[in-house]
Image (tube, rainbow, N blue to C red; front, top):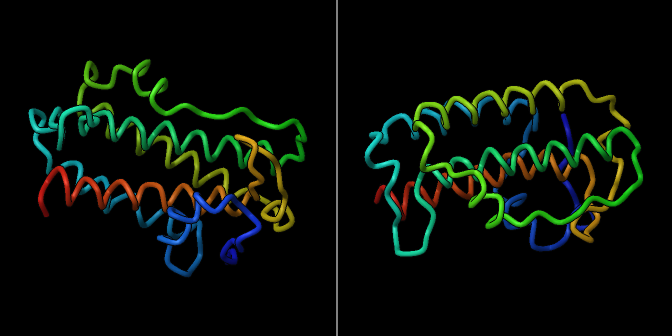
Amino acid sequence: MTTRPDRTEAAPYYFTYIDQVPDGDVCEQLVTQLPVVVGLLRTIPDARSLDRYAPGKWTIREVVNHLTDCERLFAGRAFWFARGLESPLPSFDQEVAASAARADERSWPELIAELEAVRGATVAFFRSLPAEAWDRRGTASDNVFTVRACAFLCIGHVAHHAAILRERYLGL
């Protein structure tokens, strides 16, 4: 079981996501969160996946693509740090990435399947880590992160956006 990150393991902003993760085994939570989120996404009809909750906000397809992008980002950072690579990693501009992805031109089932596949790879990676790797630190976006914080970010970021989907897009 992986302990919760303390406040030195990521910049304060990232605890918006980390604090949403319940206590427990982080790898198990990566596994159990996915069917809940995918179940929610599969209730959304294809036509509604192009909805925005307000002008200028992302469509549901763009939100799901953003989840997949950020999962890759957080797991990629964790990989870099876990393997002892010391070069700082650059910042990530979510707006540039979202625009380039053109998610609204992709099929809705394909976007959901990609999120599932990426989470599967994330789980496999974190399960493969030796105990000492979880404490390793590195810099990304001019902020220090531990591998552990990156794992918690994968879960917390999805939880954050799933809540937004339920409340603002779906009115649940």
